[in-house]
Length: 158
Image (tube, rainbow, N blue to C red; front, side, top):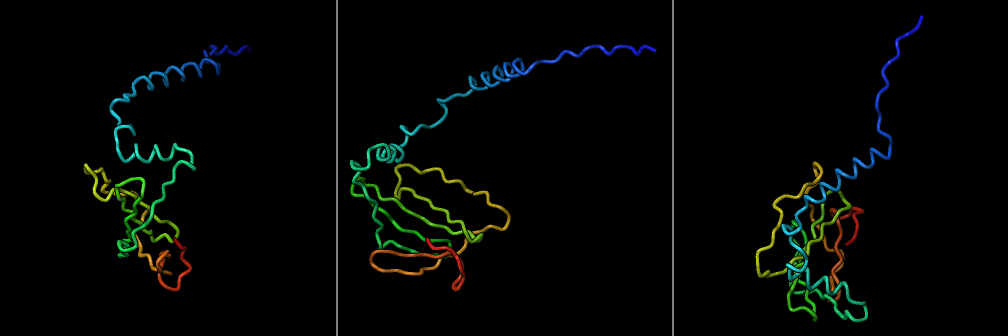
């Protein structure tokens, strides 16, 4: 008994598949419109700090120093104003601890920006993760040491 032969399927080899994939990716790359996105050159904050980061360490000579009189600890986190001798623009440094016990969010922004900056209204966090209080472990004229978690816990130090 002779079985009927199945028709042979046409298949693409690996090189042909890669060529088709490359053509699809190239088409998507051409659709990108770079002029619709803000660049570092369009933002004074970014320009100042990018230029600083690109200079050699010995030429930087810039240190940020926290103004101890502005240190503030609230249930939402810690806040302090930092300034530099190189830049006249003071920055606000804000620390927010999360109740997962190991995460601290650090935000740095201008104290008085020339234009209002975009600040996302919501931050996506895993279910149940909320801001948590920080506590002062040590405070003197040179430093403030903060810890995560309630008093007596083995929370991390910041």
